[in-house]
Image 1 (cartoon, rainbow, N blue to C red):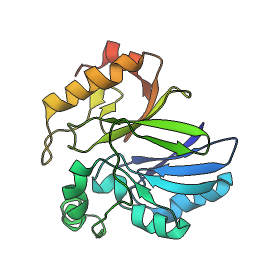
Image 2: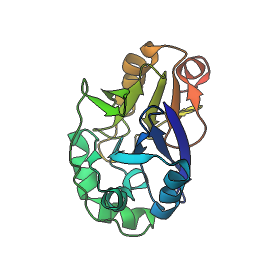
Image 3: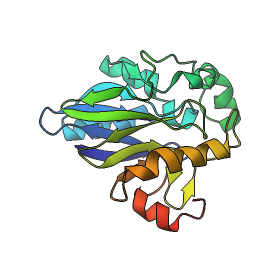
Length: 208
C-alpha cells in the first residue's frame, strides 16, 4: 500500500491519499477541505480515486467529501451510523468553526466493526472506536501494518472528548482494548500531526 498525506484547512487536518500499487486504485480518507489542492495531489500521482472514506463526522474531516465524490463520481463510505447527527449538523459545525458552510451529508454506506473495505487489492478491516465521536471508526490494513486513525490517537495525545456525545472513558477503552493489542509495530496516520506507532504511544503517551 502507498500513501500520501495532504494537510488541509486551518486545522492542518491530515487527508490521506491511499492507493494499491498493483492496480492504481485509490481512496481519499477524511478530505476535510481544499478540494482543489487534493485533486492536484491525486493528479500528480496518476492514481484513480474509487471511493471517499470517512473516519468520523466532524467538519474538518468531511468538508470536501461531497465535492470530491461528485468530481470523481465515487461513493462516500463511513463512518459508523452513530455519527449521523454530526453529518446532519454540518451547517451548524461550519458556523461553530468559522469555516465555509458545508451542507448536510449522508454517506452512500455506513460501516460497522467487522466489515472491510478494499482499495484495489489492499484490504482494510473496520474497527469501531467511539469516544471522540460515537460513530468513529478506523481503517486497519493488516498486511501493510498501518491504521488510518482519524482523531482517536495522536503522537503524544488522544482525541478530544468534550464534543457532543464524546466520552473520554470510551476513548481510552477503545485505544486499550481494540488498538494497542494489534501490536507495537503498527504505524498510524492520525487526523492531525505526525505519524507514530502503537508501541511508541503505549510506552510514552501520557494519556495511556
